[in-house]
Length: 119
Image 1 (cartoon, rainbow, N blue to C red):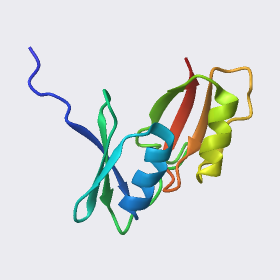
Image 2: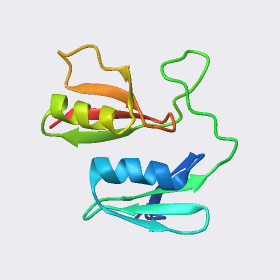
Image 3: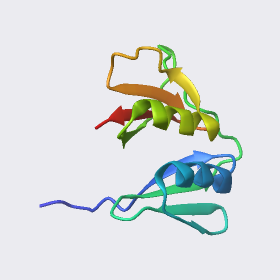
Image 4: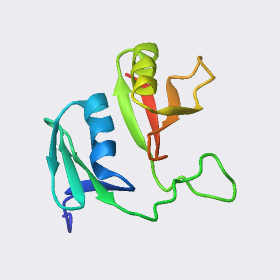
């Protein structure tokens, strides 16, 4: 039997409202603002939250002397269409050159790595 239930995944960032807006544009859902915390509630999915961290240092990817800390895998129908969308929203490619793979790696506007993965 499990000891706990996963409630929410939280990302530290310098601007919670802006990063929640980025992910809301990518995933849909409803943004709920609190003092220094913003929730993104997506129907039938895990809540994604964003917490103010003024000294936030983006993870390094890839870097043998640093850590990506974590990343999100986002499933998409069409990699090319999704790529155009996330780049227009402010993502930047980290490892998207290999078009033969079923995934591409990007950084969100605060520097967190995420993958677009073909279903």
